[in-house]
Image (cartoon, rainbow over all chains, first blue to last red; front, side, top):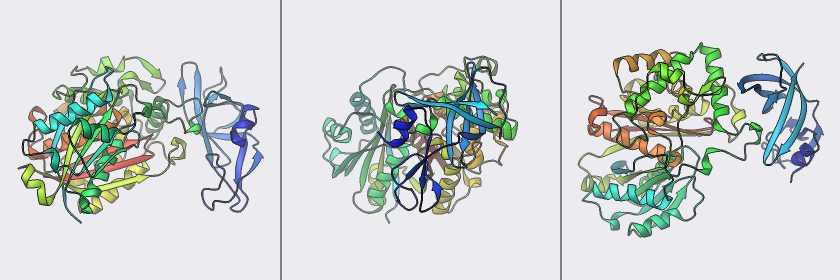
Length: 108
Length: 369
């Protein structure tokens, strides 16, 4: 299991970064996709913005961008107001359920 | 580089039944041989099987079942555009001179493991294709004011076209009202917006110019090939109302064929979801960006079959690996004047658009009679 997954299981959203390119690497990998340099990890502040969204039953699911590069589909916390494009969100929790990663977001 | 022609084809009916993969690919191959009396097993230099099935060694298994001992036999996998990737691989064998005749069989079972890309963790818990389909749809609605009715018209047109396709999983025709009241899947998608996973197989024969005329009196030539893979993960796209890989693949194909979008008489479009048909015809340059819905409405009202004459994925069904091959067969029949009730008058140039995993990869082929 890689560092991203082992930390995600603990509820931590870790950012893979290439110190040589000074850039985020996404999806999580052992090496930078640009220079093949070894990745270093740091904790995310969890603040992102909504790029697009739709609704599945009672919950909005949003395509969210963190750190201008990391994009994930996550669930907006139930009973949230209708989201808006470019609106800021905070990652409230993250976890793993089987092979799937779960991201729960709140509007800020 | 040798010129490459399509000289034969065979299909199974697409269905929602569970059928063994070996039976499907052999049935399509038998159909191809039945329709090409000049073809002998000994003529075939390469057997390629395009599929996402987990079974191993399928090209060798098919070769044995069909009495073929080819120089090359292997599987090609690229999720939903496995079929056209198989065609491009076979083209390369022939164009390079490694062989003169290649059999390409696209095949899938209804419960294909190719429907969900487990690797794409950026999709979070939303790994099923309906979620990227919803994001594409919402984005297209937002940018171009696309309506639910306009999306339903895509589905209505393709089901209507599939009525005359003997290999479609269903020949049922639906009214726009019926489709607009079909089951809601998400805020932006109904069941009627989605293509249905199916079991099925389609087979084509590719030949070098040297042998094409010995096998077929009406060979159809592959004039342009464009492919682009931008990523594997869905969220890497920069614009969710447009498919960049399709734009780039079409540029490459048109350049190779020395053609442009105005030359296209008939097009097979990868309508995994209704919005994908609108996005693709816009991104391929067949219409201006944002004009796709109006164009499709006119096609529907005038019964013009220029786009997806066999019913597309929505009307005919979507057995992943077979889809790209079935698209090539339809286009070949159109250019040969053998598409029966589906025939577009004087079709001379045809385009095939086949893509995978939320358009992270696209293939565009241009055929000429």
